[in-house]
Length: 336
Ligand code: ADP
Ligand code: MG
Image (cartoon, rainbow, N blue to C red; front, side, top):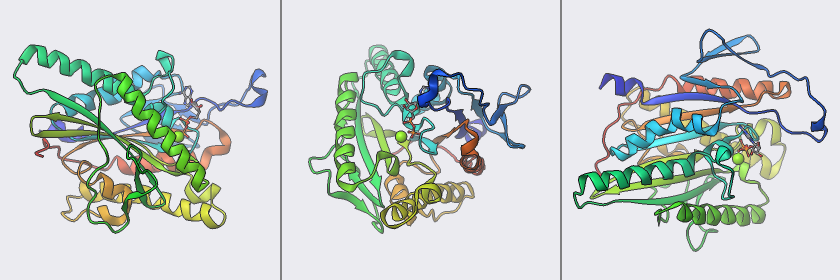
């Protein structure tokens, strides 16, 4: 039990590659602001500050290694009946969506991200289990896809994606449309639908997807037991500081920060063992309430930029990750 406890919150950092520029043909001599410690694979140094996490990956890490290290253990937990959440946090352009695998495009194997890899492993393990056990209770897999923008949640798989399914102050979120996931083709359809609906709403609202949080949940049902894997691609953490000047952009930034701060507050309050967890402080935490709790597993991937011009954002992302590292949860098998 103790070892489960200490491993229930895992924090990792991934360094993004340098952004491509028009003059990309010219060899750049810019050095990354992130130094990875040679003595300790978990530590990194930025601007004289030493940070230590469960895993620190430099920009050469592959999608497959990232998945095997961080997500494969969560998949095993989900199949064993626990709720799990993987969150990508960081400023826009640092590879959050790339890491999480939110793209509906057909990608070369080496670029495939977390969501399709999860599904592949879940389906493989389920079919092996079914052959082995043959106990007559099939495991069923579904997906839901929610977007949170300006403190409202939208169901990207619903017929009407313009109507919010949850707003601030709501006591409880009852869940989004769940579509079956029997194969990669089903997932592709879901990602396409989600991307299309995100895009349509995005154009109507004059925002980009980096201003909203996206949550794909893979639901595994075994008889009456239901466990969830939330894969969350958070809005760019630069929030108001860089982009927010006036009007809508400023309001968006405030709401983004509200969501990010409330995640932190919820995590700290769970870790302190409080009975009253401030889920209702933001819609992001309201939506996650049922599966993001002190009985579940959590992995945070902090995505950081190697550019000197992004130093303050990189430091602020690493500080957020450091504060999340204080969280300790006590996982329990989901009873629903
Ligand atoms: P974010 O979601 O954090 O705003 P993206 O995931 O959209 O950032 O990444 C920005 C761009 O950089 C995308 O074109 C993406 O494909 C590319 N990219 C990010 N990380 C990597 C990586 N590790 N290897 C290759 N390309 C990457
Ligand atoms: Mg993104």
